[in-house]
Image (cartoon, rainbow, N blue to C red):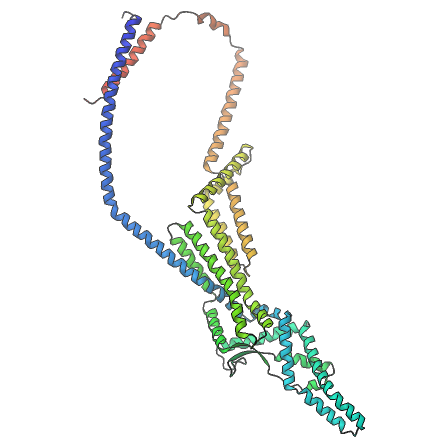
Length: 532
């Protein structure tokens, strides 16, 4: 084949480029037509699928609204039962268990207002049974029968009133000393034990109960053990008339009949549902969250509602104190003693409500971080970026958790669930429930979660670390091989190729022919791709 000149070669190239452009335009037009047909077919298919799925989607939307409504109902029931559960669980512990009742109210013996009230009631009871002025008068009348001189008889009359007052002061002083002494705590505890036993008998309708409602509708606590202790102390101090003090059935009024009906109702609730009602309330709350479509959002609103309910309960105890004082003070109990008694009754419940309030707020915060809201996602992304940077930085320095980190990544969900379960068990079974115990439990649980995030090894990081190690090993092997070749063959002879560098090439024509052949092959491929 004769060689073509440069002009002929350029003309041939131009002809081939024009042919290629024509074929390319035809191919693009055919492709556009095919794409239009495919788009029309896809639209028809989508319309058919949309009409076919319209009814199932409507059914799914209806079921979704049903799930949401069911979740709301369950959560509302749980929130309504939560404050009742707090009160009944406390009542179960205090009103049914005598030892717990004594342990709760025994510290009242150290309260000054209660001591003053008890001392006043005991002194009044003794003076009611022993007429000290009349007893003193009888003693002085007996002395007068001894035919004393007129001046002595006159002086004796002047001493009668102070003597009676002195005996009354002596009794009051002995009572005050007893009430303020350490022995009074034991006497008070025994009185509480007797009172609680009688109280349980009354609540259960025992006809032989010593604690009863009086004719005026008053519920009272017996002070017999304390009066007997005062009597013995007076005898020990040489007060002779103390032996004449009879067994006194003295009591302290603590409630009226209408309040007693309320107490009986609370007692019945405590016995009937005090043990399992907290678990029922918790079950309703958990069921509502699990039934919801967006569980993280449901958990956030449930925890917020729980915190609100517990806050209202804690505030209700403060309002209840005003109501209680208005009922029992000063007609039944002095204000100071009533305040002290109410505090001992409600302190445990108020502390539980406050701790539950803190728990609800903390759980709501955690649920918000896990929720679908944009700020929460941004915070999670920021934290994940930080954890990833820390893990990669440690891996770059050769610090990894190895196989344990891989196992931790595979079982991450199980480990996180186990942390939550342990924290929940601690909060449910730790007694008494306090704000500090809740805060520390949640803080430790969060630290455990952070530790899991730092120690786990995601699959992409493991693969990246393996690829980096492989690349480093290949580079080292290549460098070693190159060094060995240089040592074996010596330095390359760069001048040897210089003689041939300037030699003219005899194959330029063949190269041009090869270019034309390639163009011809491309043209044939375009021709074959066009529809005929």
